Every structure is written in structure tokens, then in C-alpha cells.
Amino acid sequence: MAKAATSKKSGSTKTKKPATAGKKGPASKKEGAALMRYKCRICGYVYSPLRGEPHNGIPVGTAFEDLPDTYLCPVCGFQGKGKVGTWGFDEWRPTRYICSMCDYIYDEKRGEPHHGIKPGTKFEDLPEDYVCPVCATDPKIVLRYGNVVKQGFSPLYD
Image (cartoon, rainbow, N blue to C red):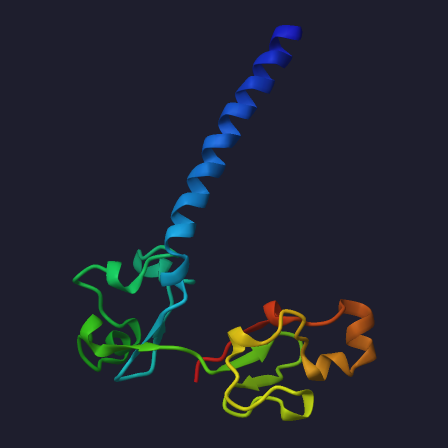
């Protein structure tokens, strides 16, 4: 019994360390690239490395520059607008973000002057303790779920 416990202990330690190390390496390399999104000039489809296109064989985390030469816009192809490749995409950065709880939209152009956030303030530049102004005023949401912070917002694809 002692031998079995020893082999399990050493086996699990050896198995866990390489798996964890392998996952951290690629994620940290593509961290900056994962934030850049690209928008199709024809239909408005947004390619995001954060979600990839698993249904088209493109895994999550694939940077736009690493897409195959045969890549086509999935929406344009489906709608019969032709074969729009990577040449039909422009870099795109979201300027509006939506709260996952109440659907409040933070617009960088508008800001929140009544909360001390000037117009033109990028979402990334908001303070770390930023909370949704609508959810923060609703006691039912605050009591049940707590404050909705920046991580509770997602980009709004216009």
C-alpha cells in the first residue's frame, strides 16, 4: 500500500507541472495579439482571436496574422457576397461595452461625466474599481450578485 501511495504522489506531481507550464507559455506570448480584432469591410463581421472560429477549424487564440491563406469571411461566404479573404478586413477596436447584468452600455465617446469620467476615456483606462452605474443603484442586484465590475462588461459589436 505504501508503494502505491508513493507512486501516485510522484506520478501526479510530474503530470501536473508540465501541463501547467505548457498552458502558460503560449497564452502569455499571444496576450497582446489576442486583444486586436478585425472587422470585415463588406458585412461588418468581427474576427476576434479571443473566440476564434472553432466551427471553421480555427482554434481560440489564433492571431489574425496566423490565419491560413485560404481564410474567408464566414458571413460574406454564407450570404453569397463572394470570397472575401483577409484582405477585406481592417483592424478594429470596440468603443462601446455592454454590462452583462443590465445591458447598460458604456460609450467611450460619451464617458460618464456625472461620475467623473471624461468623454473619450477608453474602457481600458477606467479605474480598476469601476462598477456599472446602473447596477450599483439597484439594491436587488447588489444584494444578490454584488457590484458588476469591469470584467462584467463585454465589447459591443456594432
